[in-house]
Amino acid sequence: MEVFDALALGAVVAERVFAVHAGLSPSIDSIEHIEMMDRRQEVPHEGPMCDLMWSDPEDISGWGISPRGAGYIFGADVVEKFCRDNNLDVITRSHQLVMEGYKWMFGQQLVTVWSAPNYCYRCGNEASVLAIDETLKQNFIVFGPTPEEGRVRPTSGGKRAMPDYFL
Image 1 (cartoon, rainbow, N blue to C red):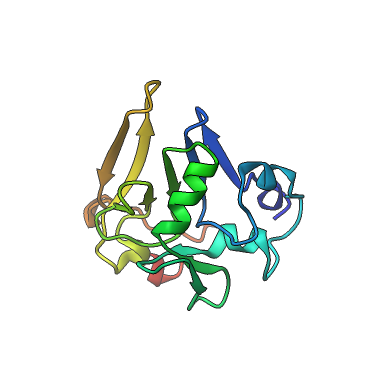
Image 2: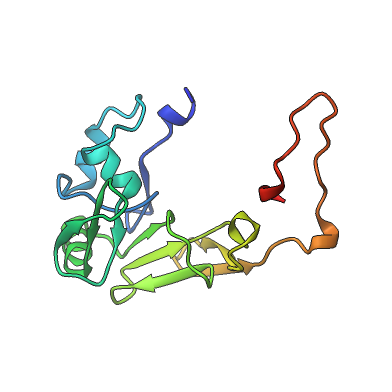
């Protein structure tokens, strides 16, 4: 947990792409605000850090209450303003399962990249990784789960075995 509590809240790639776990916050209008936050702590249950970890894009205008009980939902207008004010081309995020492995929203100013194929071995979704080259060209590498016959079930051998719902 000590390592997790020190991980960056987001990253800016080549000054044009903002990568974050979940989304935006009504309390944050610039990358500089994120840089000034004290990250070396457990994610609180509310506030800007919580919002970066739990907020989701939605087809709404402005901000809304998240059904998750933490963070917010936000619309295209919020993304457009954040990108314009911070001179960004795109916001990349994960945090939400998307069946195709990735999903563009809001005129391709925001993309959700989901990297867990067949989530919890029951969702049937694809997964992807976003590769960005030196010219900022984006390429999605889409993949599925390991076929059943290629999976190896961990044995207890002194360690705790994986519960069946993960296999």
